[in-house]
Length: 209
Image (tube, rainbow, N blue to C red; front, top):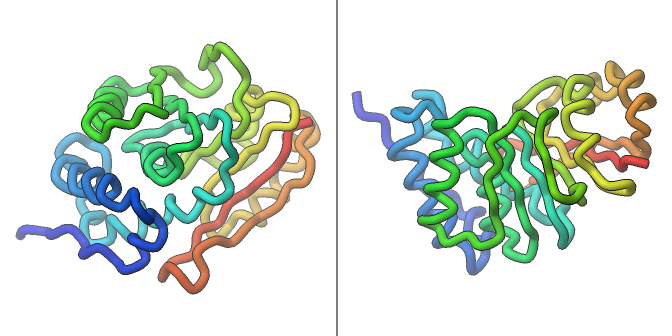
């Protein structure tokens, strides 16, 4: 049975604006190669835009000019999507698996993304020239486990912008010890995409003291 990629939702043009052609190119490449290369599951093609690409794109307004790290970047969700949406922001995609790093580098080249570099490393082992301004991650781990992987990469006053599921508030409660240990403040759960997407996006945002 042939599974076809989801038709582009109307929200895509709204979220990407004049960068929509790059978003289309990336989504088409991921749809064509993603399952074969172990980047996405076989059931994701019919919801590739709505559940994955646009789910990431709604986070773009939370980013600030500076350098953002994407820990466990995988297929480039959210890192490549955000780099397409925000050409004014620099991105470091941090990914330990060689085949995924190869994919990320290919896409950076094919899409002509001059605001992206790719680092093969685990988050806790990443060696960066300068601390990051913000760090994001999607579907990597529970918040309490993500904090020690991400918070040390940030400068003082830097932000975590972590994409989470419906259990985000519960994850925050379960992470109280790690929040104190890593000196996080202003921890909040944001709901994005209401009225734009069929499925809302939840983000845990926090500042590192």
